[in-house]
Length: 543
Image (tube, rainbow, N blue to C red; front, side, top):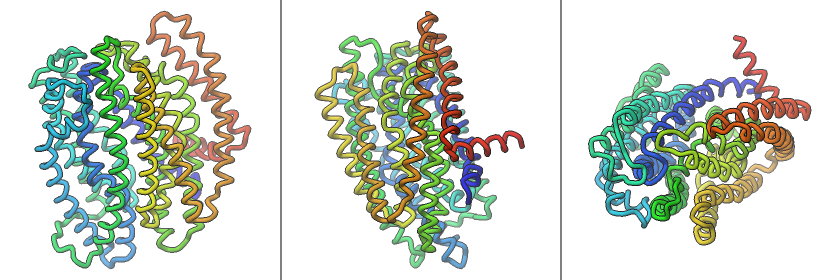
């Protein structure tokens, strides 16, 4: 498949991700408007994040990494097209999901205590625990969504999984909007939110995830696959999937240990900020919202490209076509860079203005939003290494190698934790959450170097010269265009007194100058990947 063909096959996924992410930002903004980005908002953020953490920790990572390659192999090697294999895999995973959901919900008090900072009071934790009881059933629906989505991906249907979260966001936005209109809360005192509204927001969040999963059912049936529960799984080859999942669970575990350290430090900062009278949020809520924006270009471009590539790479590995596999990896890295490199520059430089424009309303002050932008800038330092690392790992997964990614992730987690300790011991309260974002970035700089070096030893030639040359050109084009955008747009913020209007003007000018400058410079430098992306977009718009 050509680069243009790959871009075309990824376009539907990217479009769905764009719409979903935009609605996701609306969702985040509405919840921040309603609960604030300080201590009260953190009690909800912890409770609504824990289901995803538990799911990813114990099952989700294994499903994402193992399902597609194993389903593709089942379709290639089994006479029934892999139906029995898929039925058995879904049945066993479904049982595990139900058990995990019940156990986790019962353990809500322990989970909240684990992920909340030591400075939280008993009243703070009680509010978060009430939220968690309503949110933890999301584990089951996250699992169903992932399983059905991977069945679709293995059959070449990539779009529905990317579009489904739109429904999730719509349901959650409706719940948060109702609270915003009729509810009332003190953003620094969680005890001011009633049990009824806690239930309303928790149920709304969980119903959104349920809708996201259920909407995939008709799309799976349309592929010709009809699930039949299968309890006799002997002889289907599921043991191999279980062995692969073991290493993937270890991968996720070490990753979540680092996130646990981040969460405990960040949630502790929210109560400390209230005690110190800091006046703006520095806890887990601003950290999480900045992370959402950091993930935007990665989710829209890289995930879409890699999702389209992984089944093909797995097939190339099975057939021994290693040259094709290297070509796919190189293609994925170069096409991802077209969007990721300029995004890192733009979000890093103009993040404070962007988040001020989007979040500085209702219970969130201009200072709250500006601080989120500073955290985003810290994340953007590691956006390119994070993306290169993510694509490189798919090379290992295509060979059914989940052990090597685990070992690399263990190093990343150890570096991240070490940097977090340094940040916590050295930086003042007002800069500590920004430091946490920089620690995340630093860990993936190390991880990127390690994953690429290891993959090169495995495959030999990984088209490194071509990839590096493309990224250097993209960096030069993005850097020069970003500098011009900053110089031209900066005076707008000085002229306009209103922070939100000033941010809007600054962003409009910066986007135009940087967008045009980047496109012109990249084309002058003969970055052919950008031309291929633009040609595909133009063709689709014309059609």
